[in-house]
Image (cartoon, rainbow, N blue to C red):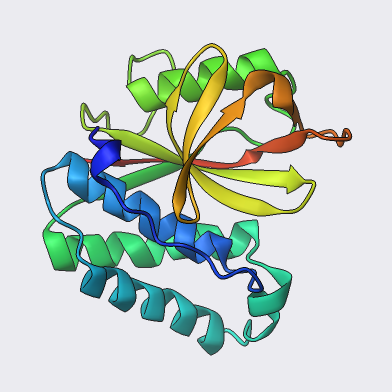
Length: 196
């Protein structure tokens, strides 16, 4: 995936809409993996549709300052799926990486996510796809946050996050538990997304 060619959209410093930005940046990465330019205009249209989804369900303005939940992001994926099909002719498939309590060790999460992004067959994915994949990763501490993972190494997750590329080091995170100076990853709040 040509991640260096992606200029991710940046979340505002005072809003809690990281889930919207994570979805839009994920769509941009997936389009690029198919050699399709995801334009700024497309990003703006998808942003409006996701914000309108929140508004029609009376989730605004609370989501603006309190953030977007697992349910919001799951529903955003359904909205983005329709958008990507209509706008670019791309079929998307996505799946929750693990259910609550299914993955409780960090090394297991790392292997699961690595396999899911590589598509090597170890992690079962619906509708097998040889296309590039990304993952929306939910972080729970020190503050709830959504980000996009595009690669896993032994020592880090490579992320596109709110206007920048970011490396989350293995040693700097935990799985579900809160620890000082560590990011807490929530495996049940991780979605793997691919194009077919």
